[in-house]
Image 1: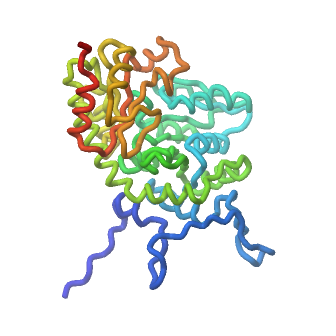
Image 2 (image 1 turned 135 degrees about the horizontal axis):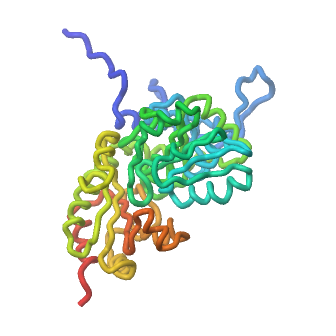
Image 3 (image 1 turned 90 degrees about the vertical axis):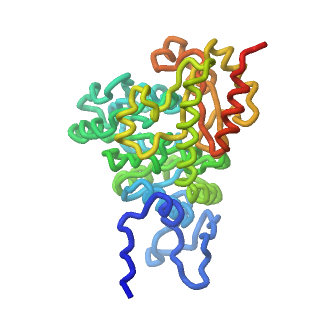
Length: 387
């Protein structure tokens, strides 16, 4: 009889999503780890071991989810927070102090832009937004670069490895919001990211039923972020953490379906007479297609398209939808659509949106896992001309 095969040194994303950080198998043990709802734990003196307190992020349920995130991202450590914005804010506070400088890509989620342009300046931390290569604006006092891969809402894909090399040479941390990609399509740390941030509300949770954030990186950085979370308090409730973990178990299989549906829908929309343009990194006409193909293992479930006739025509189409849901979020099993003109980028002028590649009538679609033909029929009906 031949010897059994050696275990794979690096399990695949589906295996990690299901098993990483979970309970160790033993007779009589539960397959699913119990949720530890306790806010506090018995402790009297140093000999009692670690002082556990849920706000310290060492609740067993929070720790299990963090281990799963770190395994999926291929990093030394990770932690969970109460939202994606909490994850981004705590990471940047760990990296900077008064007098420091941040360089940020111009194409970022609106909440991140507000954090960088309105909140951090109150603490003496300045940000320069750059439309092109963010490393062109580095200064001696720069401590962090912030980018999204792909970006919200036009799915641009910056040169992550090149930016990481320049950041490393300058001694600057690179913070990557990889929410749109998920760790299934992109492990940003493998390409030089110092910190990888996700809104766990999106693909990691995957069902529009939990608000959460995660940060992954080396142990030293995560320890620094943890100290800020302990001080500021944006801790994820253990029940929400368990919901996040359950969603993560199907992450890889869901993302495969998101990728396939989005790619097919993007091609179908590009051929539709009512559509002016389509933005999807999996298409050859996307400006960053070659870069995305080299960097990512899948092109993602996010796409955008501009309806001929501008905002009014787009709104009219959205009102006709029956299967795709009009809601300002993404990454869930159901297809969600929104117009950045009225949601994430409502604070910008028409000219500013145009500079960011957001034309009139632009619709962002988070393509879900429904049957593709049903999504096509729904959009075909919505895009029919008025009679």
